[in-house]
Length: 359
Length: 273
Ligand SMILES: Cc1ncc(C[n+]2csc(CCOP(=O)(O)OP(=O)(O)O)c2C)c(N)n1
Ligand code: SF4
Ligand SMILES: [Mg+2]
Image 1 (cartoon, rainbow over the protein chains, first blue to last red):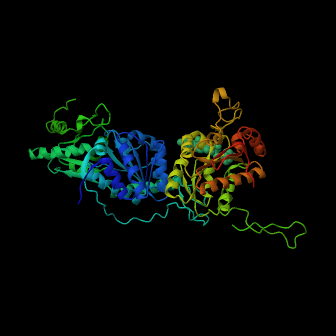
Image 2 (cartoon, helix red, strand yellow):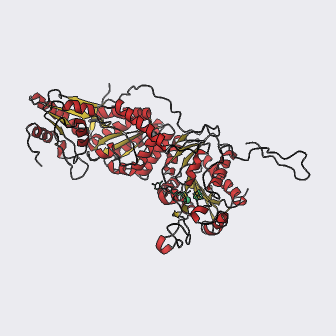
Image 3 (cartoon, chains in turn yellow, cyan):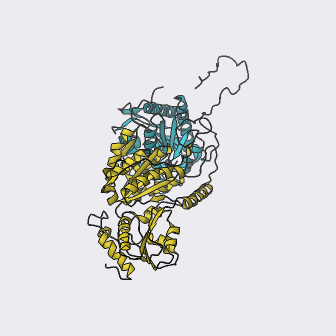
């Protein structure tokens, strides 16, 4: 085991290349920029390509083209850039192409964007939300595996802390189940044989005038339902006898995990659930944790987005309360006081003691 | 490709006439399509396939399809293809080519797709000198949506939203795509063709072939604009399509080669045989 002190962006680029990523395209924006810089450094040496695209729309288009040849490809931005990519992200889902997308978000206000999306039609993306860098370097390898396995975009939800903090990491290649071959990948070789390939999001098939969008969308729906059954991931601790169950994700959950462990040492009956997949959301884990709890407290760094999914999961079996909120510094990069342990502790105590959250 | 056979016409044939080879390009899976009678797009696509065959690139070509009437033809093209969003084909082609540098990669877009919705894509792809060929079928309208003005619609042209003809003071001016892309440092071959008669169709095939040759030689970005008839979107009788194309669109969007092997031609001319 060799641990190195790496900036999050460098570690994520390194783990991606280790996972076989050979194409990246992006457009600079804080706090995503360093990820692009690191891909630009690492990919050429690995036989890959990194393009400084002329916009996020072109970045996702380039990654789409690369993915259609079977290459492991990724793109990313912050929520703003991802907003520009939405049309492509939903269409790529319909084209059933693998793609890994980083959101180095400015806080947690992009939860809706990540889990609901702003693209057209019925589509879903797997969304992975690491709490720290060692977990992120594993989850990004998982992201490339899941993208290929399900032929679906997978989004990694990070933030300024993940992208910019130096942490000690030991990046090791993970083993995954064997994947099916990419017989759909375009290489031109079957031209003229009557069996040329087609990557098509519209339900069109070579050699046929029939277009079957309904069949395509139903197949996608069945696939997404299968992903919901198979790919849910979460972490829970101290929930069996908890009065208050805190639900939090990403960097915020990292602080929550630490604070809850301390409060337990002090004998407070508090536990937490940390969704690792924001979609599919760990409905069963949250529902189970809520059993017997006096209150479910949602601590997210936004005006209240994940709380919708928590309410769906809890389904009225316990009161659900928001104890997070908008929290940022003047840079607007989302590094607000809500991330401080003292603040998180105070908010959880408010839930335990049925006090108002100080504004 | 087999050598074309030439029949002697000096004397009466000694056997009855028969088909000696299929006239249809091998890469065309069929000829049954739902585009309008008199549409120029199937013609343009056909000569594009012929150009691929002439270069023996049948098994190394990858198409990136835009969104317009020509999209429906992608099922007839026996070439690997990826369907892009409206306007976005050049960036997909970039990703394809970077991962498959030995392939012949081309886009098939319309004027609405390339010049209206996705203008920035093609300009940057050209400036980058990306080793792909972008093909724009220019009929001066959104044919697919029913004949609306695009960025190439010529002044005076009637469309659904320029009912009295395009008026510069109200609707702005058309963009000459070939003229805009030719001066860019990354573009190596830029030409404009048309498909309104047998001669222009032959020239279009030649220009496509020369664009593909330029790509295969690694010269940089190549671009072929092809003026195509759209009698439906022009609201004229089918038979008047070729004449309208030549006179109305052709008088503004002049046919010829604007740039060859990175050299600008001051007076665009059609390529020699
Ligand atoms: C983002 C987006 N906007 C609008 C459309 C609707 N649309 C489909 S085809 C088309 C115009 C196509 O024009 P062109 O590329 O010139 O092709 P033509 O139909 O003339 O062959 C439009 C506007 C779309 N598909 N996507
Ligand atoms: S509307 Fe125009 S471009 Fe479309 S198929 Fe008809 S003639 Fe062709
Ligand atoms: Mg058009």
